[in-house]
Image (tube, rainbow, N blue to C red; front, side):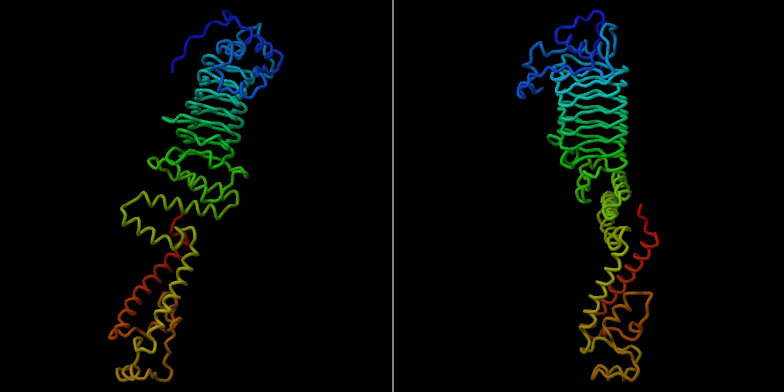
Length: 433
């Protein structure tokens, strides 16, 4: 966006309000324009403020940049409270040697700090129609606590040596991006919590990096309005910890058109490093489920879910054991039902002995007796032989025996599948990543 040419510093004649700011900056004091009436001091009512609370952006620019030798600056910087800044405070590509603080102020135009280098910038409690801060460098903190922005806050590629604190703020840009911090680098903490309302507009932290994430889930925008692709954070503040389900709700607010598995991987990694292993596994499982949901046709997706669910998608191999135990228990019920009804037959007897068994269930001495539980285990586990499967089989001549045989085939197949999946998950053949 093109900016208007600035008047020469020598030509600027400060009004009474601006003279107060200049004097306070020289003394390292706060220039407070408030009238100690909360309603009257609300920046939302800045249009009603008179000339005694109005500051021209051009004068502030000259003061901040030290362009007038007769306007000295104390190291404590320019500190203004409760004023209206008319015009765009344009500090593009400038280096400001002192901190800047505008508390509870109202800006009539978006401040411009593109490519600027600042020590500290505080806009706490102020109202502004956006902020143009692409590639901004702040040695210390960028403070937007309680700030109300009614346009895009742009911090693309910004480098912030301290914290980026948006606590209690309000970000509104319904037709576009409310906060755009793509590729930003915040060495300290990103505070994104207790916002006055969820942002009206999108929030993008694509490929941004922060040291600590301190947030609450109520302060993030709704589904489809969040971009976390490539977002990296070292840890999550203890006060911001939430269970895996709530964090998954946060991840699922991303626009599905730009799905990336990286936010899941990042969250799982951080949770694991913080000692929350179970939550990390839940996030990792959700990642695999999300990947499956976006691959292949419906049949292939269903098949992959059915195959991977018994081992927790590679993260819970112990679940296969539970499934095997459930299969054995169910098989015991199925195989115990026909006993005495003549549907399970000893297969290593002659025809006459089988006929006798059908008649009176008599077995020769030494022939293994049928045991439903052992039979269920023997047929389910391919690596175990209890000498039941080889000695007994359903009698397909009987209706119940026929259906028992059908179930037996399924029982054997499921047993092989679960055993194979369990071994594959434990040995790492089923890859987690």
